[in-house]
Length: 452
Image (cartoon, rainbow, N blue to C red; front, side, top):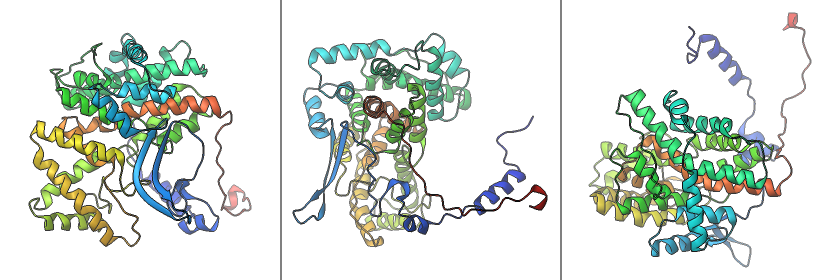
C-alpha cells in the first residue's frame, strides 16, 4: 500500500517548479502599496473592523501629534485587566468563568448571576455517550491541536441543530464547546500517552464542584490532586489568555469564517487551525526549550556567559538559529506587556512553593539582559520587554504540565474571546469578509498542448 506521507521525487520536482514560478518579491508590496500581513510600514496592524470586546493600548499621542510608547494596557469590555484580576484575587475566587461572562455579555455578573452561569457550564461539561471511546481513544493522534480540532468537528454530528446561527443557538454551542475543551484536550493527551508512548491509560471524569482550572488539573493528574495555589495560578493564566484586542490571527480567523455564515463547529476548528501555527500559539513552548538549551550551553552562574548566549541567539548561532530571543518583544507592546507583569509575581510565588527559585532567578536575569543585548544588536529598536509567553511557559513547567498541552491550554482559554467575536460578527456584520489582492502576473498567450 502506498505510504501517503512519502514525498516522491516527482512531488519534489513539482515543488521546485512551484518555487520557480513565484515571482512576487518583497519590493513589489511597497510598489503596489500593499500592506503585507496586514501590517503597515511601521509594523502596525491595519484596521479591518470594529469591536467592543477588548482593547490594547501601547502608545500615547502628544499634543504635537508625536506617538509616544507607554506602559501596556489591556482592557476587557472597557475594564482594565489589572483591576479585574485584583478584584477576584482579593476575594479569593476563581476568575475565568467571571471573565467569560463579561466577554460574552458585556457586563460583570452579580453573585447570583455568576453562580447560575457556573452551574450552566458545569451541566455542559460532559461529552456524548461513547464519544471518548469512539472519537478519541479509537483514533489517537500525535498532535493535541489536531485531536482538538477533529473532536470539535465531530461534535457537529451530535448537535440536532448545528447550522442555526441565531444568537441564542450560537451562544448555546459556544458555551458547550467552552465547557468541554478541557476534556477534549486532556483526554486526547491521555490517548496519545497510552497508544503512542505506552503509558498507563486513565480517564478521570470532571468533578462538578471544580472550576475550569481545577478541572484541567484534576483530570490531567493521575492522582487528581493539586494545591490551591496551583489552581489559582492556572486560572489566572486562563484569564490573561482569554482575549487580546481582537486583532490576533485566530480571532480574525473567527471573524472571517463566521462572516461566511458557516456553523460554530467549523468556525471554531478554523480558529484552532490558526492557533496551532507556531507563529501564534506555540511561543511559550519555544521559551521553555530555549532556556533548556541555554542551561546546556552556557554557565548560568555567569552573567557574561548568559549575555554571550543571547548574542548568539540574535546572530542565529544558538538554539533553533532563528535569530530570536523567545518571550521578548511583542507586535504591539513596547514598554511592557501587562499580562507578563501580572504573571511575573505569580511565577515567583509558585517558584517558592515548588522549590524553583533558582530557575525563576535565571528568567529574571535573562529578562534584564535581553533588552540590553537587543538594543545593541538591532539598528531599528522600538524597545522590548517580556511578553506573556516569557512567564507562562515557566509557570506551565512548574505546574508539571506537558509540552503537548501548552497550545491546547491557550485554546481552552481563548475560546472565550473567539465566542465573543463570533457572536459580535453575527450581530453586526451582515457581509462576508472579502479582501482584495493585486494581481502582478502579466497576461500571456495560450499555447496548444502540442506547442508547449
